[in-house]
Image (cartoon, rainbow, N blue to C red; front, side, top):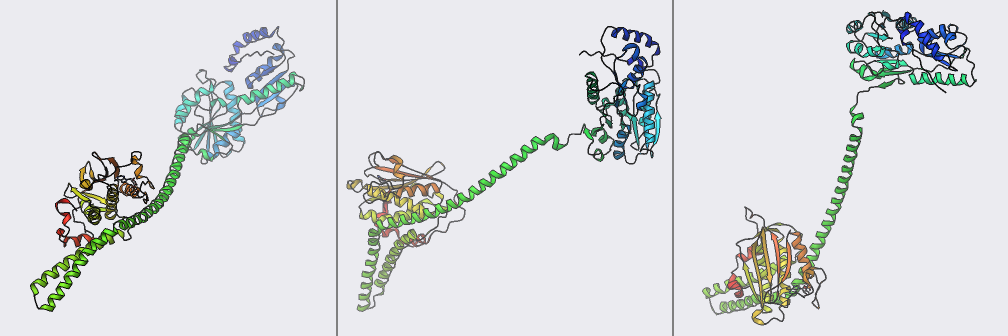
Length: 580
Ligand code: ADP
């Protein structure tokens, strides 16, 4: 199948003198071709084919598309007919809801014969039908740009219906759609139209059938005639329904509500809304926020449970530390009993002496001295008992600023009797005046006692002159170091830092918990502990703790310290000269 297309443009411009030449050309063109079907598009083609079809395409079936509303009896009897719906009613119906207060319709068209015909049809359509409450003015035969000036005086109380301008009054020819945008730019009233090609050129709205639909219907009718299914005579194609299309951008610019249009009206050129424009970004952002919220909730849940676990662990550590302190106290008990026994024995002897003196007569001077001795011995016994009581009492970990040296002094005082019993000398070197850390006094003393008892155990078989327990503190970086060194058998070669693991022990009756507790306490205090082989034999255990600034106000010392302040240090001969 072949298609030939001839245009009738020239006829549009009413050029009657062109007709004879045009007819001759067309006739010659078709002379030796078999023409099976002729389709004439629009009223222009109808006029032409009505007059000339017998001359040019004799016998060929004719299909003619024409504006709807033409009466079938106007169609020649041999023609098939396909109505083309210029839906003036539908177009004006779209104007009503968006311009409810408008009472005037201005119809604008050109001056060509066809223009005038379209204008006439639109005018009679508008006047005759439901728009009778509108006044209808027709502005045709104007010369471009005249209509533009006139439209600029209008407002939204007027609707403009633009049909076609193939030629203006000055004889200038145009393609109708080209005038839509210039008119719309100057017009204060919305412009409605009847051709699909006007859309997108600032046409406000129209009710139209798309060119594709018209072409499809005409093609279907032609095919049906060609295969003999439909006789060409007076066949009428099904009319397709028009649909409303409105330019939301144009209506918005004029302040007319696009939302007022019927739901079936398709909106084009809808100004981008924030949601339409950034939907993906917004959905992603909401997704991210939700994910974050979930993550935060999960973290909070996790933190809560971690806190519970930490509290539980702290409680267990407190209990374990206390149990370990009981074990240490057990080890020290014999020497401590001896320590307490000494002053108690002295008190007894002094009390006996005082009694005898009272029997023999009033010798008050000597009696005063005896009472002073009794007081001193009682304080000494009390001091030992107090230290032990503090070490063993139930205790919750609390971190306060404290002076390491004073805490370790008290710890060393508890170790003193045991060292004396084991014939081990304590060498204490506290290198700074005060060493302030954030800590728990009892737990830090426990660190010292655990390290020291291990050192004493390690020196069990050490040659007497070397049985020295060295305890020292010094500034190190941003903190303080406590070093506990001995001349014992040294850390087992294969152990390394494993000595800090719980249940690691090389002692027959050891529990393997002392160093593990030390490490836990030190870590809780933000510090570190490590073991090293000591040059010349033995081992050194070093604890590092971060320093804090010395508090402005003096810290209230525990009870034991107050007692010791009233006690003469010289009551323990070994403590003099740096040895406890
Ligand atoms: P325990 O004293 O019950 O064995 P610890 O955890 O206190 O438990 O010590 C673990 C092990 O570390 C000890 O059994 C010992 O082998 C080793 N150790 C600890 N301190 C010293 C030290 N000063 N010298 C040599 N070995 C030590």
